[in-house]
Amino acid sequence: MSYENDIKEALAAYKAGALSDEEVIARFHQLNMTDLGFAKLDHDRSLRRGFPEVVYCEGKTISQAAAILTVLASRHKNVLGTRASEELYETVKPNLPDAVYYERARLIVLEKEPLPKDPDRKIAVITAGTSDVPVAEEAAVTAEIMGNEVIRIYDVGVAGIHRLLGKVEEIRSANVIIVIAGMEGALASVVGGLVDKPVIAVPTSVGYGANFKGLSALLGMLNSCSAGVAVVNIDNGFGAGRMASIINHLR
Image 1 (cartoon, helix red, strand yellow):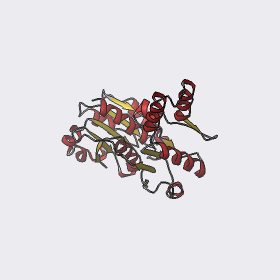
Image 2: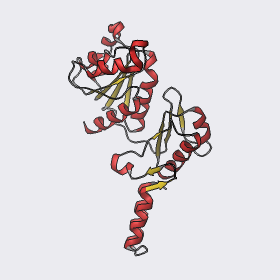
Image 3: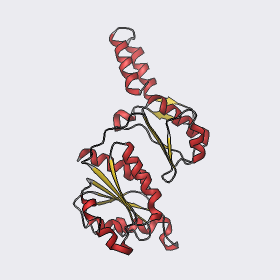
């Protein structure tokens, strides 16, 4: 049963007189959160934010992450686990047979009730190079499960700017644009100067030593001279996909 149905059931019982004031309040407290001891799951987030709590799996033990994903899946139709390993996926698969593992994106996705997508409101995900694709896929798949059509345009960095220029019209057809680049992060500024749509820049840790694990790309993007470019954290494809989804549904 979903979280929303649990609430409706509690309200119906209260209306029928089967639950007292105190009992229905206690029921809502129970519905809002599951305390696993090592984690407190926020079930109400799906109503507050439009999507259930997303699990950042890295740093948790396999058993902890598996327990969290399993409980969320018992209460919500759609579940997303980020920075997930294949070992974790194999662990949760018996309990979540419909879950899918996206290896490049390192995402576990359970999508029992896909959110509607407007084909006229797209998000473009652009990378400077092929090495940026894992972060791009994290952003793209995140945006898709949150109810968005996604255009993928990969390997069009500034070292061969003609590759980007050949895709300008396709890029301009998108409602929101995510630009993912390592090295010096210049692609975000270039794209920002070509479009009238919001651009979300994602610096990646791709690059040689002076890239400082993404710091050079981060600083380059923060110092962009193109207005309308906002920046998320290094390698944070999920954050970009989530932000792009919010903007796309508002626009």
